Length: 462
Image 1 (spheres, rainbow, N blue to C red):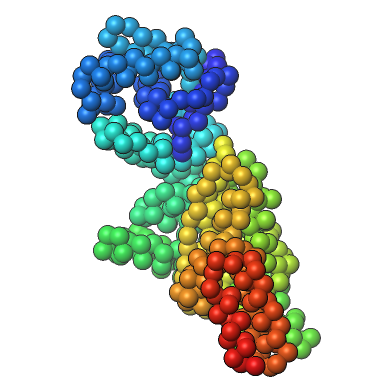
Image 2 (cartoon, rainbow, N blue to C red):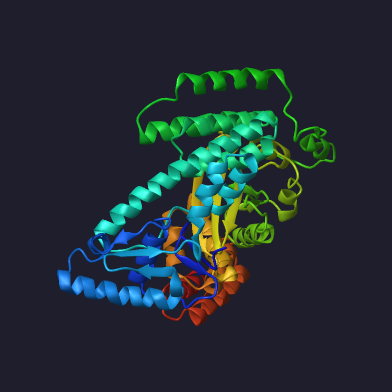
C-alpha cells in the first residue's frame, strides 16, 4: 500500500510522512510524474515540458536539482536512470489514480466514492508559467472532467431507476454546475423536481436551460427537453403540489389571515433566507451552511430599505421540499434566497441563488470556491460577498458596492447603515443620533471621508 498520496484534484497537496518544502516547479514535476501511473518518462520529455526556454545545459542542471529535491521528499519513490525518471506507484499514489480505478469498477458504490474524490478540476488554481506543461494539464483536465460528467450521469441514472430522486437531484445539481450546457442534466433536474411534486422548480429549470443555451450557443432546447416541459406543465395542472412526499399540505396564509395577520407583500423589497443545504458527500458542512445563513441574515437586517423575514421562518422549511413560489405565498415575500454547500479535503464550494418568486425567474446566482485554511475567515468572506451582491441587487444599486469597497471595515459599515436608517426619519432626535454614529464611522475608519461628509450633512440638516 502506498505510503504517500498526492492529491491533484483542485490543487497540489501532499498527504503522508514527507518533507513538503518543494518549489512550485518541483510540485509540477512531481504531479506530472505521479500521473504517469509508473511509466518511465524520458529526461528529454521532462526538460521540454518544464524548461523549454532555457539553454539545454542549464535545463538539465535544473532537472537534476529538481530531482534531488524530490528524492528528499519522496525518498526511494523517485527512481532515476540515465535517460529516464519514474515514480514508484507502490509507495506514491494519487487521488486521480484512485478515482480512475473506482470508475473502472463501474458499480454504484464505486461511482459514488469516485464522485466524492473529485473535489475540483485537475490542478485547478495551481497555475504554472511553462506553456508546454500548461497545455498538457489542460488536456488531462478536460479528459478527467469528461469522465466525471459521465460518472454523475451514471449515478443520476442509477438513482432514477431506484426512485431515489433526492439523491438524483444532488448529483444533477452538482453536474449542472460543471456542465451547464448539457441538456441531459437539465432534464434530470426537471424529472427529479417533478418526482418530489415541485413542478414550479421543474418548469423553472427549463427556463434556466433555455436561457443558458440561448446566451452561450444561440440555440433553443431540443425536442426531448421541450416535450418534457410540456408534459410537466400538464401534470402540474392536474395535481395539487405537496410540500414534500407524503406530507400534509398546510395553507399557512389562510390560517394567519383568520387571525387578522396581513401577508400581502410589503412595499419595499422583501426576502426570506431558506436553510442552506449541505450537498457534500459526507455531510460534514451543515454547521457551516447554517452559520453562513445566520450571518447573512444578521447583515441584511441592518440594510435600510430591505424587509427581511425572521430566520426562524426560513428554518421551519428545513425538512420540506418547497418551491420559492410556495414560500412566497405562505410568508408574503417577493425574493427567496437558496444556498448549497459542497466540500471536502479542505475545500469548499458555496452556490447561492436569488429567486424572484413573483416572476418565477432566477435573478441572480453566484458560486464561491474557497480553501478552508481558516473557517471563520472564509465564512466572513463569503457572507460579505453575498450581502454586497444582495444589497446591490435589491436596494441600493451600484452605490452600495462603492460604500462596501470604501468602508471595508465591517464595524464601520454597520455603523454607516444604522446611521442611514436613522437619518431617513428626518427628525431632530434621529438626526442627532445618526450624527453620533457617523462620528464613530470616522473613528473606526479614519482614512475614509464618508464619515465626516455625513456628519457635515447632519449639521446642515440641523
